[in-house]
Length: 302
Image (cartoon, rainbow, N blue to C red):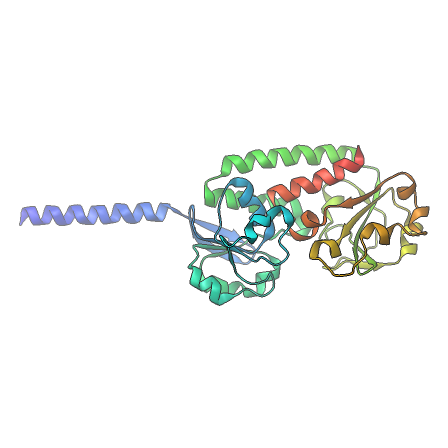
C-alpha cells in the first residue's frame, strides 16, 4: 500500500509539474479587440497583416499561411506553394484556415469584423497600428511579437535603430511644411495629423500645410489648384494604383507633375518625393516597412 501511495503521489506531482510548465509556456496578450492567451513560440501561424508578416520575416519566424492577394514584392516568397493562401485581406477563407489548425492568427483593421469567428478557430491577436498613436502602437505590436516568439532582444535593437532614424528626420524636418498626396485614378487625397499617414506630422516633425484637413480613412480629396494655393515645402506622394496593380492607371509622377504643381516651390526645389507605395500603402507598421518609410523621408531631406 505504501509503495502504491508513493507512486500515486509521484504521479500527481509530475502531472502538476507538467501542467505548471505548460501554463508557463503561454502568454496573455491585451490588444485592441480583446485579451488573448497565446502559446509561446507557436509553430503554425496564419498572418493577414502584411506589417506583421514583414516583421516575422525579419525576425526569422516562419509562418504557414497568409493572404496572398496584393503581397508586396519584397514579400514575394510567400506566394510560393510552401505557404497556404487563406483568402483576401477583407474576406478570409475560414474553411482553409480551419483545415490548417493554426496555433495563432494575426490580423489588423481589414479583418477586425471577423475577429469573433477567427477566434473560434485559434487564438487571434490584433496587430494593426493605431493612427492616432502610430509609433506607440507600432512599438507595442512589435513588443507583442517579441514576447510571443522569444525575440525581445532583436525587437529592441530594431526599435532603437528606428528611434535614431526618427530623431534624425525630425531634427531636419521641423519648420518645414508638407503635403501628403495619395494618388489614385488620376486624383489626389491628402491626410492630416492623427490620420493614416499623420505620423509624418505627429512624429517626424513636418508642419501640415493645411491645418483644416478633414481626418478620414480615405483622406480628403483635393484639387491640383490646392497644391499651388497652399504651396508646401515638400510634397510626399504615394501611388496607390502602383501598390494594388490597377490596370491602365497612369504613374503618379505623370499625374502629379502637371502645369499647376510645377509652379509650386516643392517642384522647383526638387522636393517632391515619390514614396514606396508597397511599404506605405500595403505593409506599413512592420519592422522593415517602417524603417524603409523613414528612409524615404530621410532621402529627400539630404
